Length: 205
Image (cartoon, rainbow, N blue to C red; front, side, top):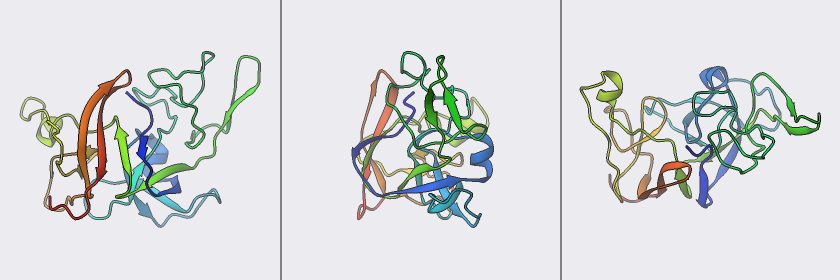
């Protein structure tokens, strides 16, 4: 699985500080967030955000993972000796944070990265992006396995935010609004299956 959202055509972004359940539990790249009224801890942030459940306001999605050693992430932005990431890619990323440490040293005690505790949020709906984290089964299947179905993504489909904060083509409830992105295409590469999503402003879902 890719451990960051890839830029196809850049969109607007904002440096934000994760709080609440994001700070406590971590997140996967491409997770949708909403603004909060929490105070900044780090002066470089422009806003504080927590995970969105797809209802009401959705501000944007986070471009990178959080280095919380979540399943599938494995400290994705800590460099290993071969300059790759376990389960991830070889791009060096300095934008996300680790909740428990400020810096990491390699085997020679040289600084590898220093956490900023700030992450880049892509402001909805801008740009075109390749995302590796999205819902693959519908809400019914996630809630009660065996009762739902896989999700199939097709070009020009409108996208929503799931109750877990991920891209989905299923409108899970009446309060889940279209986030003005559509599917451009689907595909896979060495990092896994992906969606390319683009602005769909002016297109009725």
